[in-house]
Length: 631
Image (cartoon, rainbow, N blue to C red; front, side, top):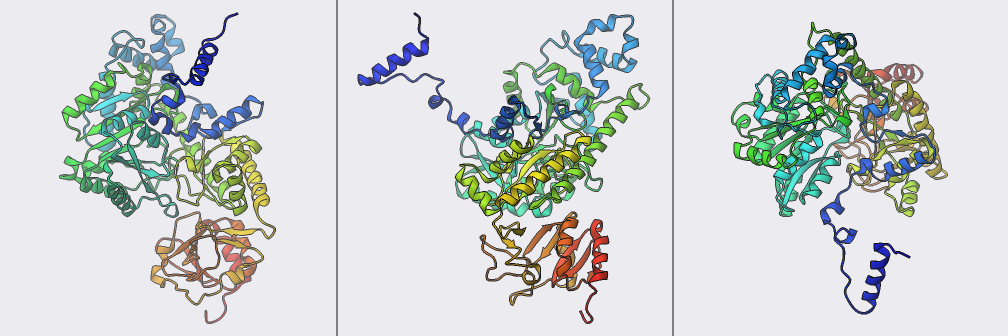
C-alpha cells in the first residue's frame, strides 16, 4: 500500500515534533509566504463574489454587477475591430478569393496593415513597449485629443491598464516609508498594488455631499498627517471619471490638483480609463495632460504625469482582450530606460490586444465603408449607458434609506445605504462588516451580486455598495424593482417597533412617533439661518433635497446641544415620496429665485433646495398650504 507524500511526511513531522525536534516548514505554506501577498485585499472578487459563485453553482440565477465587464452582461462587441482581428488571427483568409464577400474592404486593408507591423504575425513577440506602429497611432490619438503632440517613445503598451499601474507603482515605491495618495472611495487595484509593493496607501476622502468632488484642502491634510507619521509622499492618484463614484473632475479641479503636485513635488498618476464613458454634456472629460500643457511653464515643464487608458471600458468593453497603455510626461530618459528594462522581463505585451488598442485610437474614418456602422454601434452603446445610469440613480433614490449621486461617468453607481442600528448590531453578531452583511443578504435574496463599499474605503459609520450600470437596459426596471423589494423588507425587518422615517447622513435617526415633522423642524434656540444672498451655497446638486443648517450629531443621539449651528448642512434624497411625506406638515412655503436655476423654499424655517423635476409637486402643495400673511 502506497501513501501520499503529505501523509508520509506529515507523520514524520508529527513524530519529529513529539521527539523534541523542529520540523522543517515548507516554502509555500501560508505561514511562510510573502507577508505582502497576505496583506492584499481585492473586494471586487472577494467574499461577495465567492458567495455569488457558490449560489450560482447551486442553480440560483446571479446577476454579476460586481465588476465592470460589459460583454459578460450582454453588450455586443463592435463589428469592425472583431473583423480586423479575425483576419489577423487567420491571415490565410486574406488569400481567399472570396474574402471580399465576407469582410469589408477597409477591414481587409487594416488587417494587412497591422500584420505588416509584426515580425511574424500575432503569434510572435513584439517590442516590450509594444509595436512601434501602434504606439505611433496612440501618440496621434493623444495629439488630436489634447492639441499637443505626443512622443511614441514615451508610450508603453500593456496587458490592460492595471498592468501599467502596477509597473509604475513598482517603479515609484521604494519601501514602507513611501506613500501614495489615493482617493477614497478607491478602486482596490491601488490598495492591492501598493500593499504588494510594500508601500503605504495615504487616503484622501472625496466629498459625497458635493457629488464626490475633490477638496484639495482634504488632500493637504492627508499629506500633513502622513508626513507626521514619517511617510514620504511620492505620488498622487486620480481616477477620472471616478471608480466607484462615477464623478467627472472639472478642468478647474484638475488644475488645482496639478498645482498641488507641483508644490509638493509629486508624480500624478491619472487613471483615465473611463474617458469615453461620459453621461452629462455639461461635465465633459478633460485629460490631465491637456490641462497640464495648457497651464504652461514652469508647471507644464516640471510636473511628472503618467496617464493610463484601456480597451476594456468605453463603448469597447473588451475586458478579456487585456489591452492598454500608459504615457509619460516629464519623465527623464534614464528613468524611461529603467522602466523599459523592467517591462522587458515580460518580453511582450499581448499582441492581439495591441491590435484592438490601435483600432480604439484609430477607428474607421468618415468615407470608409465601416465608418457608418461603427458610429451607429458606438453611439447606441453610449446612449443606452446614459439611460441606464439615470434609471439606476432614480431607482436607488426612490428606495427607503438609500441615497445615490448621479453617475456622471464610468460604469458604476455607488449608493449610500443608511443602515438601522439593529442591522448594524446583527452584522456585528454575525461577524460581518455592516455593508458586507447587507450585500450578502441582497445576493441571497435577489441574485444581485454587488461589492460592499467597505471594499473601496469609506468614512467611518457610513455604508455603501457598488454596482455596475451594465445589465441590459430592458432588464433594468426588473432589477431595480427586485432591489427595492429587498431593501424595503430589509429595512422593515431591522427597524425597531416605532420605525424610522428618516436616517440622516451623519447617523442621527428620526423616529415617526418620537419626532414628527412638525415638532422636528421647530425653531431651536440656537438656530442660525443663512442670509438670502447665501442661498445658492446651500445647494448640494440636482437629485437632492438639502436641509440647510440641519442637525449635526456626533453620535446616534438626537437631539443634541447646538442642534442648528451655523454652517452645517444636512440632506435628504430628493424623491417625490419624500415631498409627499412632508405634505401634511407644511405650514408655509416661500420661493426665492437664484442664479443657479434651483428653487429655494422655506419649510418650517428651514431651507429646501428643490430641482426642477419636483417643482410641479411643490406648486401643488403651495396651493393647498398657502403662505401665511406677513411671512
